[in-house]
Length: 230
Image 1 (cartoon, one colour):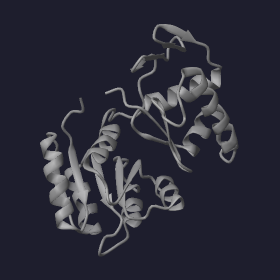
Image 2: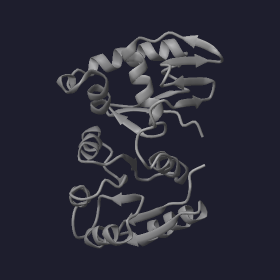
Image 3: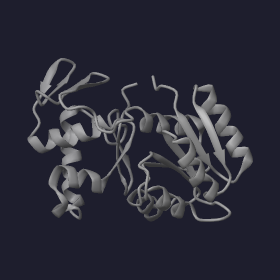
Image 4: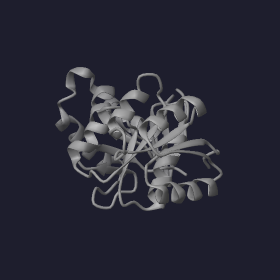
C-alpha cells in the first residue's frame, strides 16, 4: 500500500481541484492547490511535494512551461492532466520531464493508480539484488532468474534487462526512449524495431497475450507499462 504523500495540484478549474482533493485526502494524502502556473511553481518550492498533478491549460502560462521551470531545480514526479490526446503531444511531454499523463476526461481510479505508480518507490529505481513478485511471476535481479509458477523461464541477457526495467518500474510508464537507452545504449535511440521484437519475445516466454495482457501493457506509440504487483 502506498504511504501518504504531499501532493500538489496545479489546475485552474476549481471543481477539478475539489474533486481531486477529496479523492486524494480519502487515500490519506496531504493536498496543496494552485490555480495558476506561477502559483504552482511557488507552491512546489515552498511545500516540497512528493508528486505534482499538472494541468496543461493554465490561464497565465502553458503547463509545459511550468514543467520546464520545475525541471530547472526539481525532479519531483509530475503527472500531467491534458485534453491533448495526440501521440506527439504525449511523447513531447514525457521527453520534457513528465513521468506520466492522464487524458481528460479521466476516471479517478485510473488517476489514483497512475499516482501510486509514481509514489511506490520514491527513491527511484528498485534496489540492486531485489526480487520482484507480480502475480505468479518472480524476477530476481541478483540471480538474474525468472520463475513463473515456480518454473524457471530462460531469458537472454537483453530480455532479462528489459523485463527488469519494466518490472522494477511497475505501474509507471517506461517510454520507448528510456527502454532503448537502458538496454541497447544511446546509439540505438531510434531503433524502436529492436524494442518491438524483444517485447514480442518476452510476451511469448512469460505467457502474456498482447491482446489481453496480464503483465506488459502497451501505451501506443509512447512506451510500455508493467502490471502493478499491488
